[in-house]
Picture (tube, one colour):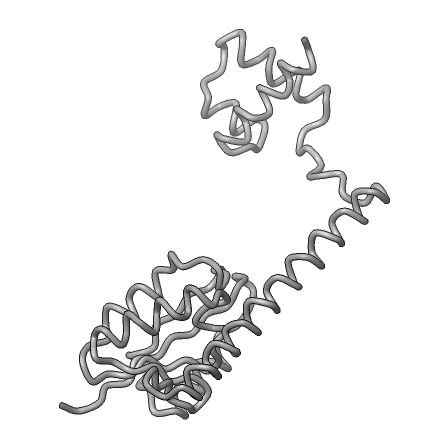
Length: 194
């Protein structure tokens, strides 16, 4: 059976670009049509549609290819689960040009160490983010989103809504708000009135 290469690329935020990973996967021999991606998913989130599709596409004798192990996952447990799933299918995992061999004790140790480093890095990022948010809140720099409508405009919107003179669509047009934002604004106006 011929080896089939299935590529997987992931980035954590929608603003990040997957081009470098796609290019690297192509250099590793993966055809462009065999590259599955996820954008806006962290490595800790196992429920990723692109990953599910990539794993579904892998069959016996195939190889799942990622540029770096942390693109596949940021949890040792998840990485081992994915590797075990591939092994059960008779497929292999390749990362950064190396192929994971679960039967090789040194390779297994190296795989676990790389997974632990990815998990550690993710934990550090989360800790730094929490620390930064706490400092910003303490300094009064995180005040939340500024309301689109002023207090006077919110009261007027509520009054117009309660008269029944205008339809929901008309009130959305007048206020420039989406349906959900309008109902949230009406709820806030009621709280302010109480």
